[in-house]
Length: 429
Ligand code: S3P
Image (cartoon, rainbow, N blue to C red; front, side):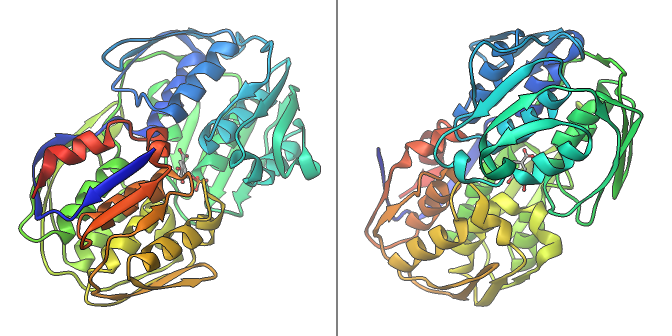
């Protein structure tokens, strides 16, 4: 599929974006191992989350997805999952494979996880190695570096571990394993990463103590089901926030967006670059903050983004590259090597495609440098089968002269089905 877009004047109007992807995965996994029935509202009905849903169904959990993106999960309790009859297919979803590796390590059965070509290239040793320290029996290609992963469930021991890579997926995998370990597991992180797993475990009355930079979890305590209300995904909202920031005279409101402090790096950075963003109607629901975001155009200036900030806007960095092409001066992103091991090598992908559009952007080992402002030209671009690259290029297309074609744009459905329609609702030619 190709997404074809042309230059627009400005964006105006009010929109909702679909439910948060990270929270959706966690609600399906944790709802499945709760005691009792969990009702989830505003689940993200995208390819990645459907993979998690199907994997949990293959583990014997009854899950019904309603028309309105609400979900009913009949929890099996901590010890009620069943051995899957076939290989669990995570598709393109890194969150699914890493979190489930943690969960499955502590079961009393055998399971195998596999995914698509991109998943089989992504690093798995970051979860396999600490889980082995807990006593997990996991095998994978190149000694557990790569999927498929094969897991013989075993009794796990608690341990103390400091994350060498800032990764919420690794932290969450270890917390899930910690639910099954004897004693108390303590996980520390040098840089804060998203804390949705911790927050959800807290609402489900898990035996968890959250005191950043440390989180402690005791194994063997059953979780209690609860209703989960999922806010809009700030990573999906980010494309419209960015577009409204760089298209003159734009004014938009995005309603009910998750504004968890471990996710709002994009708001903080754009504000520093000069964007006007108001946070309205702030409230906390299901232990997660949400708000309406009002965004208006203003002149932007370049910025330096360093390693400490990276986990707070990791998925938005390709989009920052697009915004930086319109900002006065130099934008430098460093300490972001992780971008190279996402759904695609996002540094290489965004640099090469924005260059085709005329941007002054250079690849660095652990980030990129952009000099702005530049006038972008429409071009034929590749998505690299990466949803975040496709949508970032769509934002660039809105201000490029002429027509932009984004090839293999169907990958957008990984995280944001309906992206183009939502965009069309805001466009003023
Ligand atoms: C995610 C964490 C991040 C992020 C990914 C979703 C999660 O990955 O890039 O899209 O749901 O935990 P890492 O934690 O591996 O950086």
